[in-house]
Image (tube, rainbow, N blue to C red; front, side, top):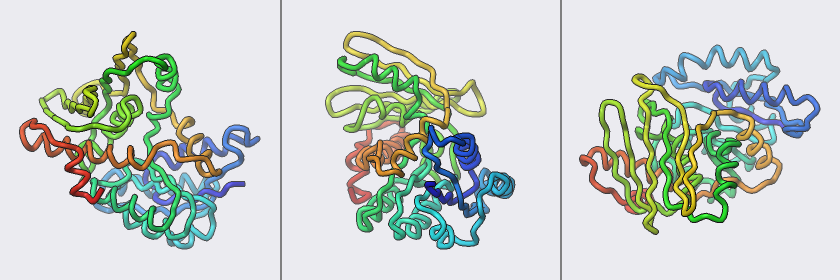
Length: 305
């Protein structure tokens, strides 16, 4: 059995993952992996953490997860780790404890609250030789994979993705929930965004990226409180235009996590993980500058990349 330790029981992902693993009684889907140890954590000043951690901890206990008093104790009782704290501000400090153990790690979204901490986490992993990755479940949805297969062989000229936008306390404005839609955009466009412009109105938040080869990628953030929300995209190919709505289902992500934990390559490169944060930092800077273009490369360089 692959023993997973779950750090930060303040996200619905912990119980969703635990149930999926328990339902796979024969081990056919996830190879017998189980969440065996959990450390509750939580952030007192982050309502979506503070107000959920106790109930989710009890639910995890009911699903057979043993609670530990410290992260170090958890590390002694598992083979691999999911860093699941919903508050990205906590991730660097927790990563400093977890990465030193030398176990493979999946960092749930968002990787960090800002670009500087995202870079520090990546550099820490390099220094310690830790295998890790971070990704949104949206990146691995079956409908997105099918769309990409349908477009194979075509030149991708651009993409317009949309997704729910909900800010997190102390985070880059697109990092806490906008990251889902941005990962959809990057899964199609890949790396190489040169500059970003962002504008905001009462019912729309639109960020436009210009890639180095002239392609255009757009993310439309949907205000959680004011309109219908969800995820999807339109891809403009050299021969066709494809549109798809995307669910937010966990099994595709969990399969990728377990495959990685069992020795598979990270499904998202460090370069892409960090460029996403450079994109988001450039988007915030552009909004503050009235929609002026901000270079992603400049943001990454200031952060030490």
